[in-house]
Length: 254
Ligand SMILES: CC[C@H]1OC(C)=C(O)C1=O
Image: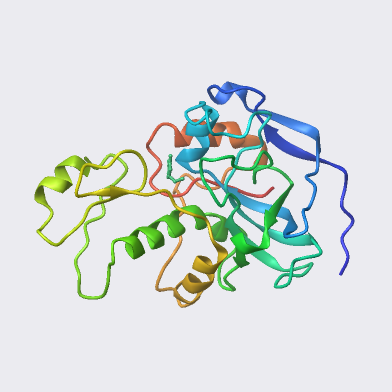
């Protein structure tokens, strides 16, 4: 199957750091180039993460790629073009992933909140057969963060775990953790003996998790407020930034 790929696309862009008001929906934004190790994805769904608005506010500007920026880490869509070094994906494949291998250092300027995005093959996996694109888009950054955190903590069957929400005070957890236990922070400074890490996006993690998703043992959790259509991305960010979302904020259809 071959796909006709336009030179221009619709994309949400910010040209400067700031609040939701800097987000603009552009109608004729250049479709990104496809490097040899990348595929071009026709985006079907994308999900928002707190790191998206922290980045837009300029919290990481010292190490960020410079605006103009198309935000968005989580993507689900269809491969429409492959680079010459791509071996495991082909046109027509339905894929999902977190498009930024390193979350904060020079993340891509062409994110997933657009009609097309280019992503390295190694960051992607085939979408689980039982999930629709919105469900798949809700997963990558969060599930990879959880998986990597458990791996770094040396977690295994039989051990107990307490997951504190976003507002959960880590410093207090450190005071009560048992002697051979550990406290894992997914962002920001850690109080010893706790430790902090930043996930490294990797499609291999998603491939390992796919059986758990396809069996239904692990399920996506989308916010009950529902899906936000592509022209309402600014409203979706405003909702996420209320800190009241109880599930993933997903943009669909794109
Ligand atoms: C992207 C991983 C982690 O880093 C920051 C700053 C967040 O908000 C995260 O979830």
